[in-house]
Image (cartoon, rainbow, N blue to C red; front, side, top):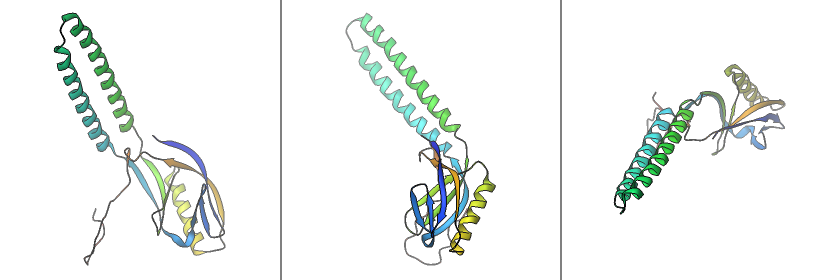
Length: 179
């Protein structure tokens, strides 16, 4: 589930404040803009898994229903199973369509030398680039202070792919991420 609400982004006394979170400017390792793209393939695969599981449960219940003694009970139970199965399928399709319709977003990422990352979005990529410039300027010039109101994005990780995943253990001559 996504939720959007405004948040204050501010540099004051060598701290970058993103809402209630404070990031010391000297700990910021990277500030960058990127396009946050929905994981549409993951949404489709998830849909297929849930649909397959629903079909298996439906078939099992249908088979169990056929073992009941009277014809009228089987008929009533079968109608109920078809209604429940149809509702489940409709719910799955609605969820799939909603996840496929999730728009790409322009985002600004602030990564620290530790595990923390701040993520904010604005409608215009140029505004995000200006914010990157302001933050970099504040890192280079300790006296700089500014404050802006931006949109904060809380994301469901199932809906978005957040970029490269790289694990490098030991060795030498690494060249980074090849795209």
